[in-house]
Image (cartoon, rainbow over all chains, first blue to last red):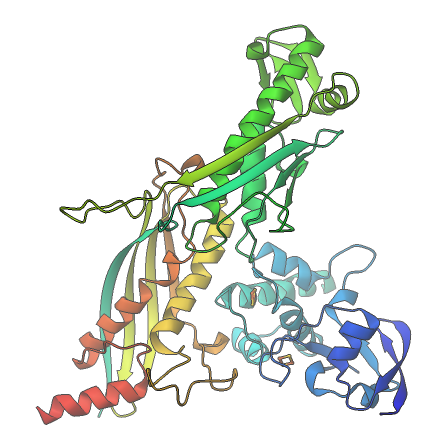
Length: 160
Length: 334
Ligand code: FES
Ligand code: FES
């Protein structure tokens, strides 16, 4: 099959790739570009581990075709830390022991980031709703919910 | 038709590791030229924190800070033998092997330090911060960094140790069948409160109160995170998860996350965890294996709570609305 060129911004830097028609963004990110932070848990839109942010919106990269991403701004968990300083969400996940095997963590953090970008002071119910498309085998979710609430408080204190 | 409340309790004991044909784990420890310590294992960290715990155990035994220890679990082809990470055995088996290896390495380290300081090795102690001191005369000291350099470049010694932990196979006595399947047991008790809708058969778990007796908690925060996740998983096993809902018939098994159900972040019961520490006799620094045990007591506790709520005994897992409704129907037919 003919390859198609696609260009987008990944965590602030320009990327250009030739992909086969039908290639998922998940596959392009992990196996062509080498950003392995999005995980493939199910490849069919049911686990959330592959979540990325495209033009500010939460998307499942396993259900997004790479060729449709031309000109977009894509963010993944590997781009969150700035100059070696962890993003408040990453810090909060560590402090709350909200990660064990870590497979769900990048997707959880992406989902939480989109929530906090739109709703800086979410209620517990809003956090639960935002995470409800993401599956975790290990933590029982409560530490993750607590981490997101803590990150939200840290953000609002910095803003104040 | 009504929502009915019930409360159930269950207590368990749970063996650490298994004992079919003997249960060994081995470990190797060696120092780098700059006095860091490398632990080589074939045991695997699945996210439960084995690397952190082994680093703590090695550091405690040798007498160095934890960040001076590097854990290598890279390769089961080339590493020392381990039966594996399962049966709640990782901390207990690998931890004991690491202690033995670290003790031998510590002895060589002290011998090299003794030569450098011109004293007896038995007169030396570690300060836990990377130095070796003469007991009673701490002004006379040498850093472990310098000891390692000396061992490597001057004295030609390998600061290293071999560790082995084996629970030997236990054979049943011919007359009585008595045997020792395990040397170490963790314990737990759970009280679960549920609501059962006797029209739909749906169960909502309101609260789960767990108490776990796990030997010594070598890293209390990591123990807690495992117990919280385990308690959730126990509820999941009790009410949701199965690949074969009509076993032995394989039909209708969930094939993806839309059908293979687990409680999500919106379905959490109010959960309480209490840890009791009663150090075990043969565990590394008193530890036992809390890994699998922590997801067990919730299951019979929920089954008992369902019985308390609607008076039917569900003896097949998971306790689905369908099973409850069928049991209620059978009950009212009698
Ligand atoms: S891998 Fe995309 S939702 Fe599971
Ligand atoms: S930490 Fe293992 S799946 Fe969430």
